Length: 592
Image (tube, rainbow, N blue to C red; front, side, top):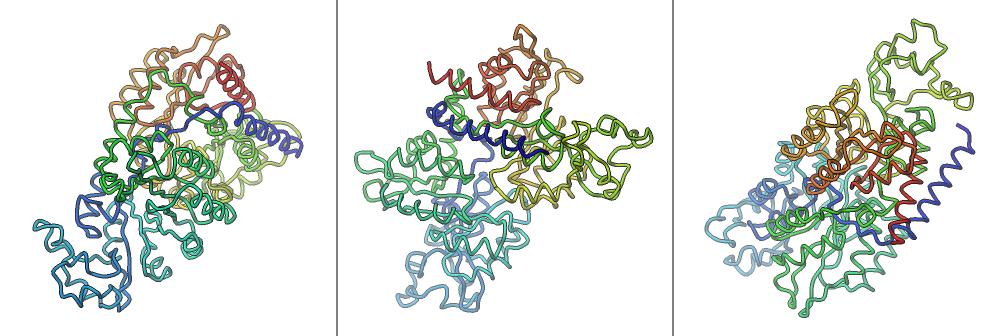
């Protein structure tokens, strides 16, 4: 691919990004742009105030509510890793001998700590709860791949911890207030999640900004999630301030870091744990998830917040321009050879999320290729080759085929790309996303070969069943169902099909894509009214409503109509035209 083409697209991307500050500065991102079922609610110390902390029953309670338990880990005298928060037993064992209360987990063997009752201090019904080992946590995680746990490290050897959780490492997030510890964890347990927490209700804007300056210098290494403690004073003023929360939450999101906020009780704000209004305020300020001592209050706030999605929602007020997902159909649509590594690189450099169609060669290699056969791509090939498809050739045979020349001499020599090559590209930047359209692959094989980058994979297809199965194999990934209205289904029955998805709570989908047509007079099918209604239903669950237009997809007028109808994302064969139309739409909206 010629360098001048790459440079032109990168230049366009830079112009678009710079334009964001002028045209989309009023967009106030909120968690409604994420699927409701993917919102992280961290249950402080296992289950917060709803059960004794750091015990198995608290973990099970958290998982049953859809939350992620946070547990504190320490090492016993004989080197066993167990859940326990405090530096001594004074609070948890109020009736123990005064001298024993002063002891720590490190002073006792595993058998000795196992004999302690850590539930009785919370009342008779919790009597008999025991300290839990890291091995028991791992076994509980193995029961369901959708379960996760956040591990707050107190006094443990990181290498020993990594070894203990290796089998479930993608279900584990390490959390600490020490960013250097997270960088160490990344080295010891590559691709594992790390959360940095900060505040404890004691840091103001200036102090927090000083920490952020240090984090920027370290490029937020090892930090996948950021957990900020927020409190109120006696007059109801937030600390840190709303301005700090909004601006730094936006910064974190743009870096691909999940911003979590936690209402934190202090002497002037003792009721923060159950402060429903504070939870709602944090959502308005851009929190992407919560830490909570009362998960029930957090979930009530979340459910109400989503239900309050405005009927007249418009993209310009809710999604910054440079965060609008534009999918390059088959990579970059008609603008480059489809499904090649250079096309994908070009797409990411241009602010486009490429789509790859995934198939498996005769000898079991997963590659990107759309068609069932080679006839369209290899126009000059012998007829016996044209009749074949990816499934009929080995990887070595496929690599001998030129899949770029059909687009012109400048693209001659392009080859099909493997899923391994795609994974390597995704690992270079965690903000990169690729849509993988399911053609002919084994889902278990695909899940295994992409497990390092599951959060950056969105599997797509026209049928729900394989997408649901995929989410079980790769809970951290994303899914999109596309709904044709031309060769399968009709514009007239689209809403009926859509409502069946809604009634099934969208099956945990992240995106719903509708195929639309737009004629020369900008008449849209399905109609604008249908699209508006369906978009509103999507937003009540945080599902992104996307469209690809099969006619006039290169026309600004087509996008204006679809954006007015409440569309939030686009797949396109004309990514440059689509980006230009979006930029102009935002500019016009902000000049009103």
